Image 1 (cartoon, one colour):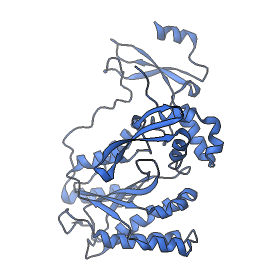
Image 2: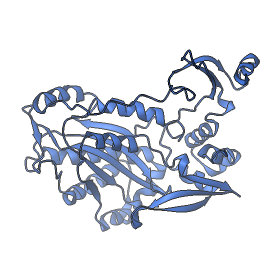
Image 3: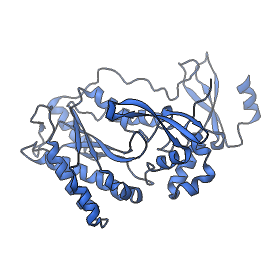
Image 4: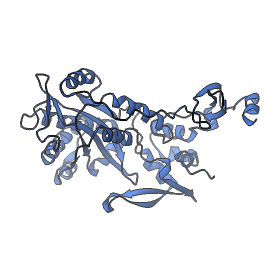
Amino acid sequence: MKRSVQLGDIVSGRLEDLPRLIDNTWQRRTLYAISRCRTAAMGGHIDQCSSAECQKLHLSYNSCRNRHCPRCQGHLREQWINAREEDLLNVSYFHVVFTLPDHLNTLAMGHAKEVYDTLFRVAWKVIKVFGADPKMLGAQTGMISVLHTWGQNMSLHPHLHCIVPAGGVTKSKKWKGSRSKGKFLFPVKAMSVMFRALMVAGLRQYFVLGDELSSKLFAKPWVIYCKRPFFGPKQVIEYLGRYSHKIAISNRRIISLEGGQVLFSAKDYRKGGRKKVLKLSDEEFIRRFALHILPKGFTRIRHFGILSSTTKKKFKIIIDEQIGMLILATPKPKSQHRLCPTCKRGLLVTVAVFDQRGPPKHWLARLSS
């Protein structure tokens, strides 16, 4: 069966051109790591099935473990989702999306950390202020937010996906549900006005925006999208799994690489999510992908309020005592990460490791037998 084209293959074909294509040295290092992922250049290991009936040997090359690599996200996503299941409250959740206008794209390309940090800070400020307002909720709520910077054609499109519980904790430590019985969060038009004002003010702490850019930013309303609440905890988990460790493009969307042209699939949301095929030169494809490589050490998943890492355990105990602990109906599926692909029963145990020179000859002999 022919191996499909992957992101690493496209980058590998242009490694010598990266200094010309990409100015940012951190982005170049990331692309270089992706090109080497699970190849002989990374070294590897030999695993053996723990089942007495199987004992099959398996050779694997090491992964780059880069968070932007499409081949390295599955296991990390599974671990993160399992941890989030333990944090879920027995309440409804809303899906809120904060989107930056494209007038800020140039600023985001040159100053990603400052722009995206401001986006996180302002989005939480909007949710926090509306939650604290007695006319809206009158309680401290929380938020889990995930930064995405891409559109379906891999152009720059920074936006923040957030889940917000339908309620909060009052100053007297009492759980208070949303006034609309979980059907309505806050008025999005009022939220959008505050979001724009706070975002522009936050950016002005770092940059001189100028009259022209400022006029463009206030010329049209900004949009905050608030989806109807999730029907249950299972939907929240599915959402988190879909968005938490997503990257600009997955390998399954890449169709082909021929004659320096990359074909990949994309959804056209203006036509109801209908799939279409786009074509870019390999150079432009790499350039666009590099737009979404975040600064070194940047945190793209953040927790706030009663869902923050420092206070969530304390608040969960308080909330569970008042409204009941959430019990998921279905048990967590067994992890497939170390399951033997041959017998599907035993677990893989590492019996040898090797560097880029490859496995020792005696192990090659055993592998081929």
